[in-house]
Length: 342
Image 1 (tube, rainbow, N blue to C red):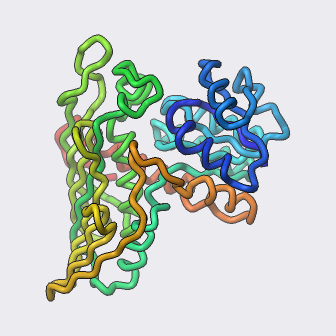
Image 2: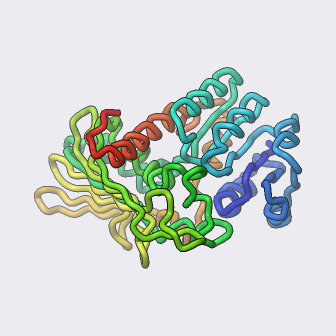
């Protein structure tokens, strides 16, 4: 299969391109970026070629797959057009910035008959998959409460240009700030682990520390703290941050009738189970991907398999839309100081 990648920033360079390159069913990668030098750099790095325009990329009938690694405001444009051009699409999260645009993408997928998967990659880690298995077995009984967090030192350290001019800090391009960058991962993870949808949210948000290239506070939130209630009555908290300086935190704790499960809470064990009788069971699996530790996410391999075997992708457009609705609810709750029902 031949792949086209739209957007040649860090996510394309560190995750999409190397994972496509390593997949035995991928024959070639074609790169496009509005900055031609970035596209040329990745083409040289991964032995691919360059498209001069998005239109040229989508008009190439030999390209089977598009990875949409563009910034948030373009997802609904590029992914929708790619689907309607007869390409399978792997879109970076969030699926879009509005519910309407997400629905347009889902309709385009249905009309085209092609695959659409959204890169909510936390479902793919061995620890999260094992955690889901433990929860579904009910060896810890029913889930009662939970808390989760995702934070690092900020996208200006991760993004391709490594400056405070990053698009993540721009209201018209990022829109959702840290909630759309990191928070949406944890919302999707909770849905995956619990098999339960978030129904009500309350939240606080702020631009507490980040400044733009002019030294002014950024236009979007760099921290969000929220309370969540699921349809089945589980209660939990979540925090998302671009100001966890010194160490990344990507942990989740699930409190059940018969004990506690801690995920990515320890450097030594990816899952720790502590029963209410005091018994401890520790699992050594793989370390989670971090900005400093880039390993194969499994996302590309899963997407290729879904196409090759004509199976439903692990993360559908509808799944991604559900997570987007929660994030939009969290932002609304923070802005209006109210409890929002999703």
